[in-house]
Amino acid sequence: MIKFIYCVRRRPEMTPEAFRKYWLENHGPLVRRYAQALRASRYVQSHTLDTEFNKLAQLPRGSREPYDGITEVWWDKVEDLALAMQTPEGIEANQLLAEDEARFCDLPNCSVFFTEEHTIFSR
Image 1: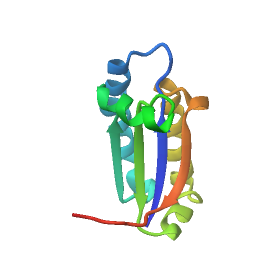
Image 2 (image 1 turned 90 degrees about the horizontal axis):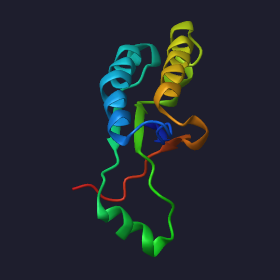
Image 3 (image 1 turned 120 degrees about the vertical axis):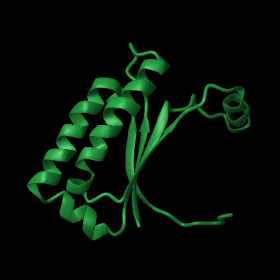
Image 4 (image 1 turned 120 degrees about the horizontal axis):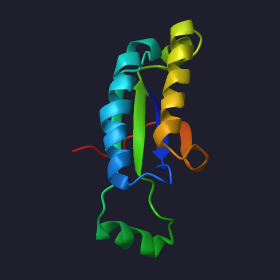
């Protein structure tokens, strides 16, 4: 299983509430619409909580402020991802999603990368 991780920062002029609303209500359905063209098997948005627990986790680690959220997209196998990025529908979907992300994400301050999961424990 291959996973795309997108650590998201909102555009500076957007409030956290406006950012989360757009991401969930506009971008989420757009990703759902293009899921088949992308050959993706799962899509999850994780919105960062406004809580003191963030500071408690950051302090001993010397970490930066948290991202506004994380997107995760799964493919069952790398061949599905490769095929999606070669078809006209997959290429168009990727482009349209990136254009929409520019409406609510501070793209130069986001981070995107592909991963492979290694489960250490699961309850």
